[in-house]
Image (cartoon, rainbow, N blue to C red; front, top):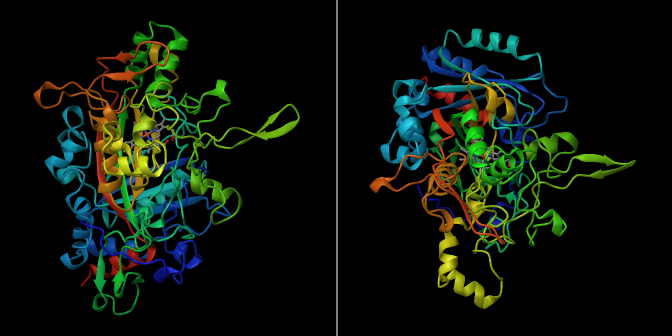
Length: 552
Ligand code: HEM
């Protein structure tokens, strides 16, 4: 579906920013907070058993909004629905028709999508524990709690849901202290959302990487990075006679069912922690330091989170005129805002003490890859470089007029190869994943023989699943032709099944400035998909509207 409505800056200056209390009260908290204090979490996947009871539950359930986490609530509940869930509630084509095609088809609903996402072989949907066919959930209820508060909250919530839903699956999580199961600090880099709508609502070419994202990239009903409103269900006002929904900014006669909502992607990613560390160890000849170094090349950060592109010996900076908003100081004050921008486990800009002088640790996100075009310090295929190449709208290079023109017209062959990685700002996601299973250190993983299952319930939020999550997953993570590379996909996440014609995808290239390029080969697959689905995370008014409107 095309993003069509061009608006001018003037047309929205009087509109309240989503940062206004009224709009935040209508927004589910997950869009603004990672709930990092709420270390205990479980995600309930439900199927509607009694539509009337389900609508009643959805019309009354207490949902935590994005207004404030001060004081910290002891528990948090968020609700999202799949297309199948909306149908089961009795919602008709007039409501469903406005949702995006990929949402309506579902994560596992189309073989081409499945192939593009890399969900083949061991990750094929027919092998998933949940998410495909009649194992597609209708509703996801995300429960978060301060330590010690989850069990009772879960018990009460499940009892409340029992008449309305069958409990299909409980996705349990464990708190690994801001580290994912392979042992790397996670949740460090997040886009910062322009809640106050300070960015101009028009598409202006960005000559340097910027971390601040237009609100409409993450929240429906507001202008996105193109200065457009992402398509979403707009209803004829007659469907909302009581005015329960906000009117659309770009179509004032329509009720905006999307406003303050977004799409939620959940993927259960099983991680072979033993396999990962064994593969690193074998290629490192059993040498600890080499093993750590190889693993950091794969991710693009050390296990404690330092970006390897930053050359400490050269003063520790890889910044080239970029604008790094790290998520602090945009809307609210203090710890709440820090949580809002950086997600869980953030090590960025933490205060540390050296001797008796308090100082600040380096910002672990203040870098681009511009000063390392060949990938000598951070391989081009490293996980964080694939998933966020930190590029502006033109491939890296001088910003002189002639040079820009040559690259804009695509006359420079090197620039053409890099083009796939340009314009990162259209392909950002807000990550909200949680870990599950058994936590192992690399040493334990190498020693331990019994398989211990662990993984990531990968969760991300975005206004346009196709342009954001699916693009990152297919064009950047799974693509074997990313940014001039060939026969390799993301070394951490890639599916290693050969492509059509037997093309391999199990290499990983690490160029060096002062020695020959090193290429790992026959990398095993470390991550397998065990389930997944696309959900709509509605605004709170929209949730109540959906609960009321299925009835008719
Ligand atoms: C088991 C699966 C995965 C593991 C173990 C993993 C691990 C990591 C780690 C360790 C980081 C660096 C820390 C950070 O910046 O937060 C990271 C960053 C990131 N990952 Fe993943 N990840 C996984 C799956 C995915 C998937 C499926 C996607 C998207 C489709 C993704 C997108 C990203 C993005 C966008 C970043 C931030 C890059 C940046 O802004 O610098 N990851 N991941």
